[in-house]
Length: 281
Image (cartoon, rainbow, N blue to C red; front, side, top):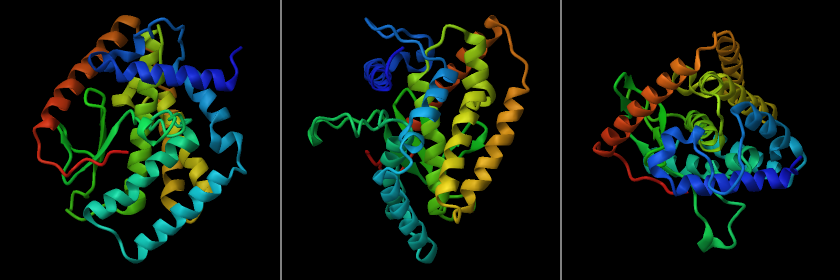
């Protein structure tokens, strides 16, 4: 059995491969890593994460204390005098690295893997837009694999700016899509569909992972009621997803590919829209 450090190293290699394969990202779940044996179903990945991430494995870490203090200060400051526009975007963007470090082993931002500042390569670009839409209407956020961009809607449908904690939670939600999309490798389309792709990418293991993170955040900061509300919401969503019947390999593969094709089209559409400048992490 591989050690924790060896497993995380295999995650890093997998993420490095993802960087070099932009044309295969929407079907990355069944793509083999060249020259390296790699197999982590979504359930394997989530179970490993819930047991070994910094938030769970080292609850007395100074990093956790620093994160809680910084977030609490930012949250309280924004309640008193809310940031707007790019100030709000930059304020909440600072926590992407924190969430990655505490829950995702630093894989997404590569923050803990660089040799020096010049060697820092994030897997994704974080960007904000005033009005983010898909063919079904306005959305809060979306991760575009094709362009490696995590888009966040900085305004509510009313035109008012989102609250600091709401934007933070949107980023956490989208990071779960990033994490599962990059690190899951399966040979069973039916299982992958139910675990990840069900309900437009909100399958069983997505709900499990997000519920775990919001539960931990609420335990750390019980005054941020939104964390508790979302933990409960995703626990209910998890039970709903678990109750869904399995589908055949053929049907699952067809649905997965249909979603992939739709996402590629959406990525091209998003490239033509006006938007705020992306913030690179």
